Length: 147
Image (cartoon, rainbow, N blue to C red; front, side, top):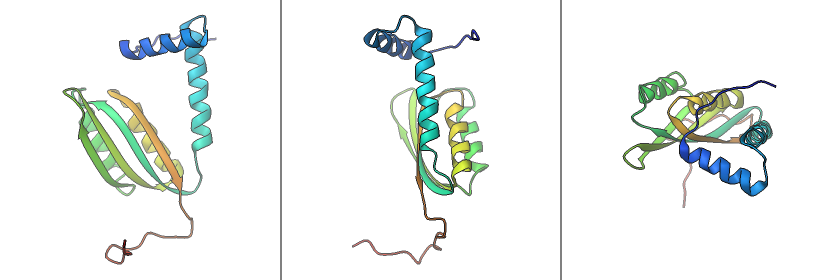
């Protein structure tokens, strides 16, 4: 086993401690290991192959140093996958963004993981939905009606 040092916000640590107590864990290391294993397993199970559409949702500290700039650079570097982004101001410190993505599952996952891992991003989740491999997106202006 390896010993590591991590930094966790007070609110998150309080949630971890409460969950550890409720579930009968003897220490923080045990619950953190189990939470990490569960998250890794869930990520592996949720990953479709081939083409997909996805919703990337994340909450971040808008005052984190250069975070907004890094996020914009991430999306500009993958402009072919980014369809649209909704930006919401949650409070004085936090913003939420929801970005619609489309592309190869592995590339979408890579971009989503990179955004979620940025320092200052407090929470992130991506929902990926497989699309038919033989269907190509239509050119704009030739859409269908929604009655």
